Image (cartoon, rainbow, N blue to C red; front, side, top):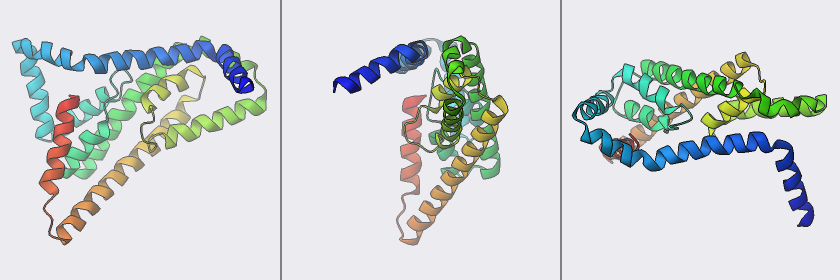
Length: 226
């Protein structure tokens, strides 16, 4: 046990700056999530802001492709971290144009993650100690990052938006970041479409009308988050 604690302590002391930075980003996101009901309540008190808020909800309910892009864009900024897959799923369940929905959601998500990445580049000084590592460590670290950039899209509860900020601090190649994020996100949206369409077909096959129920559940979750 002492050996484990010693290793943890050593790891923290070596990487404390970046660990503290990442924890701060999570703290900000967490505070905004906790305060979201208060913020929405204040918005509803203001007639003009309430009108804008209701307009946005109406546009999403009406499956506006422009607002799918905007919702996935703002939802993918690490400060907000809204599960944009739910909004995308709502569009698909509601029979929105699949190709346009994938394009809009992908562009919105990746654009926000690029912003997250570039925010991270402003804090490169926090990871200068990584440059002192040997080449073997650097290669393994780079491969691990590459894997998580792609696979992070499929790992449940993986903080992919915050990870994009972290990657930006580590001098990672932006073009590689963009390519692997793009491939991962497009594949995930395609898999969501296939799953939803397959689920609906199977449900219809056994004469269970759960289509509207699923749609209403997703809408309810979106209403809570937005």
